[in-house]
Length: 208
Image 1 (cartoon, rainbow, N blue to C red):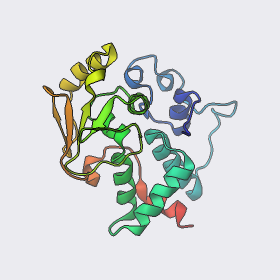
Image 2 (cartoon, one colour):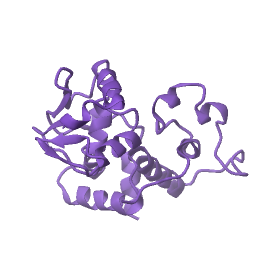
Image 3 (tube, rainbow, N blue to C red):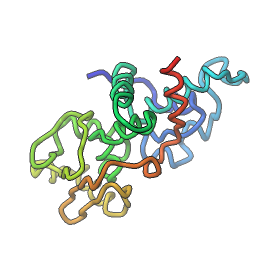
């Protein structure tokens, strides 16, 4: 399982915006971007002229870092999105949003996507009654994501269930607070995906 294991706050500083990779910490004054709002490294303060390629690259890197996907898997998503009918950039974001770890995060059952990924990998969730421990599993309309019975006594899981009850998931998901279940109502549309990414620049980058 390949994943980024370096400092996450460094990624936010590099992109110049909050990617909310550290969960609740990103909303406090402890956020590294609040304290050091410049790029990391000895040349972080230097102003660099943005080129067309540079802007395209930054959008791709931003999307990868938001969803916690490395290059090979991200490229695979793009190739699948390109083969589908419709707008390639929107198809790409739709694939990323359908990842099981993202759905768990969107429903409020994790403080960050990285925590959601860990919870899924540890086998705390089921999809349609069957245990799924693959974070990249793509959900479909009608799927029901639930917490495994053996995991419901976990202190952290109980905290997250209470947390999810106070949050509102995006319109393409519904959350049953009593059963702690997430139902996929439909595939997400572009206006329901609130990530700060200009997907057309990613398409332009891969089309070079």
